[in-house]
Image (cartoon, rainbow, N blue to C red; front, side):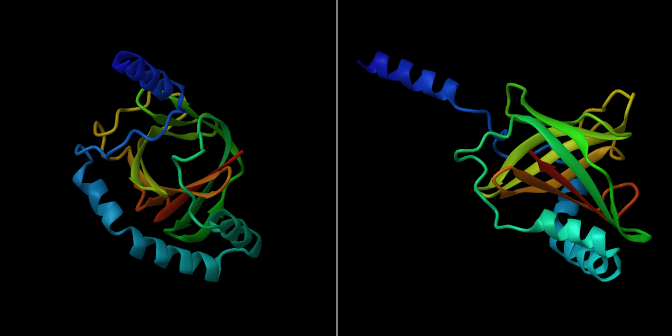
Amino acid sequence: MKHLLAVLLLCTAWALPAAADGTLPSLLMPEDKARLAQFDANRDANLAEARAKGAPEDVKILEEALAGTPLKTEVDFDATGNWHCRILKLGRGLALTVYPRFRCAISDDGAGWFLKKLTGSQRTEGHFYTDSATRLVYVGTGYVAGEKPPRYGDDPQANQVAYVERLAKDRLVLQFPKPVYDSDFDIMVLER
């Protein structure tokens, strides 16, 4: 009977959808820990400037992206599949820049959810880790289309970290504090 119960539990575990990788790895680079530690102040300052100085149609897209109350990410939710993704860049010369939609995909790479931006000149790929019941951390790398993506930690200029919230049934919002290039705060909105 014990063996049957163990087999049933194992089969049930295999049938569950993939989720975030689990605990944030200790290998997170010190500069990325510092970015996440400054998240709230960085986010608040850049959002205030974007709302005050951004074009009205761009501010509307920003507000729609951030609308909602964070939902649980590991209860009745499977992030795997194809997504439309849009990048919003805040700060560093321009209050708010909104890019058109691109294609992204989240897969289960055997360790959990793995994001890959499939179109556009600037790409990203990486893993999700659980921070709380309603927040994940994205750890990845940025690269240019046509280049081989570096592994996280190999190139500090390519490393990326973001807090991730599910703000609607099928909307994930990644918020990147202090990105290396172009802006002071990036938002990536995934919708399907």
